[in-house]
Length: 303
Image 1 (cartoon, one colour):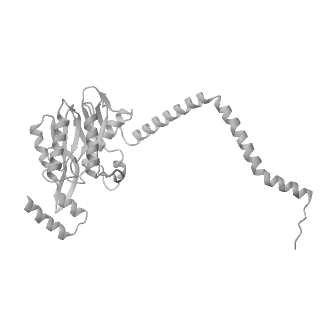
Image 2: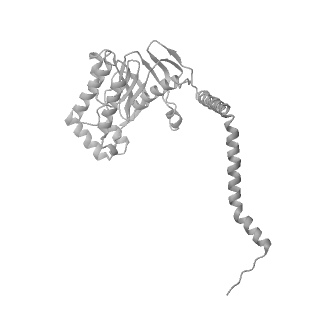
Image 3: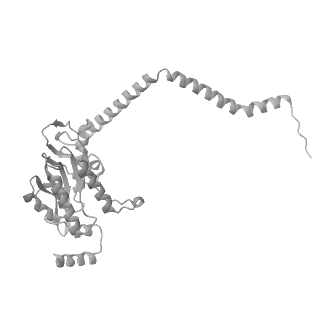
């Protein structure tokens, strides 16, 4: 019940509209191919310019961070020691808006192992990570977050920090930890820096402590590794190794009880911690008073 009528002008306009996109795409492709051919003639110059811009961008970024955050130029030595004055964690210090970040001094001589004890949340992992980051920054040519830094050349930095499992491979947290420790022990040299955080915590107390002690003895042995090592642990019994193994030094992150509340001082000092303060940390986390009281009773029995 309908009839369509057209004019020659409308027919031509329809054709232009319908073919416009194809023509535009074809023209764009043709122009793009011409640009590529032209760029091909200058590819070496473009790659060189890109590399220079990338290097300048890297230097400018490192310089800006160093200038804005009071970083200093490290002194590199071949004497096998690391000495940091007022070292800071460059990331965490920017995130601690509620309190002032507490800097720490670090001295690690060749073949020295620091056994670091102290309560959870006191800052053991932060301290060890900041040492590793400062050493890494120095080796890439950056200034470092310290008031003064003397850093020896390191061939590699090995870390075993944190807890995670690998469900896809059917590996428990403890298995992942042991795999990483095995890789460190196989590849570390006396010129390496090793960061070990609570080795052996994923199994029974006696098994974990035995593994931790054996690892410490192996790393300390200069005929096997003898690398500079930071070793954080809650096994206070390992503190006795300072008198048994040469090169082992005890340090702890300080905390004090004040009016029934645990106060973290964030300062690392010489010597072993006198307590893990685990129950106090649990109280800070918000566990019910009934559980805290019962935990203290159980602790007395166990002790």
